[in-house]
Length: 293
Image 1 (cartoon, rainbow, N blue to C red):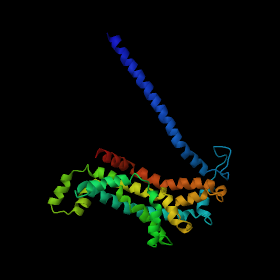
Image 2 (image 1 turned 180 degrees about the horizontal axis):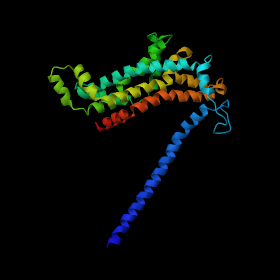
Image 3 (image 1 turned 90 degrees about the vertical axis):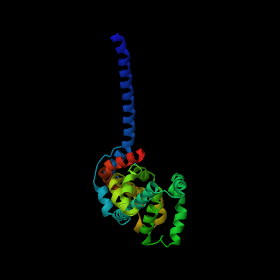
Image 4 (image 1 turned 45 degrees about the vertical axis):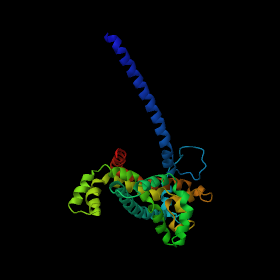
């Protein structure tokens, strides 16, 4: 009896081991495919051979001159200036976007008003369309406001990256829904206003979603190319890093700047990587809280 009953168990264990092994092999292959381009870019950033056309996958010799060139050869492509422009724009965008997103999310989660549900449905539908569909209209609006020339270009970029972020309130709203409304009601009974309830009660309990919003808001200026290119056009003084990296791959620059392009790509990823590593715990908690809500 015991031998007969142990056979199915053994067979089930074998099938489970085989299934897990196949899954792990597939995941390992996918991880290799995902990491390989990053690994190649990092190696290329240290490559001593010039040009984009080489016959070997791995560099034959290594050097730090590609990184040095980014900060010393600023006559054609001023990478330090582009990095500074992007960093400043990212900071202001992060602050404004975080305020917008959290404010709209709190209103959608806690307040009940006419047209609330239609507004949420419209916001979700609009979120399905890529932002670059509106870039021509956005440019002409900025031009009419005299924000498409000179020193107003960074301001225009901050406005473009942050003005419409409130429509992406769904994740933060899902997190706010998990906070008991009884806390808000108790604060209001004690004489607190809506603003005091938001800042004194809700915000201290919302660190995960605040960090998540800060992270996503900071990333937007670093990874955007289309809006930055349309607004900056040929004014190199206000280029962002995405435009600078793209310029390095143009036919007149690619032979001399290709390996520096790889070095620039590595440097651009560092601020985002550091921010993500510092906030990873809160990032995961923010997303899981939103799903739960």
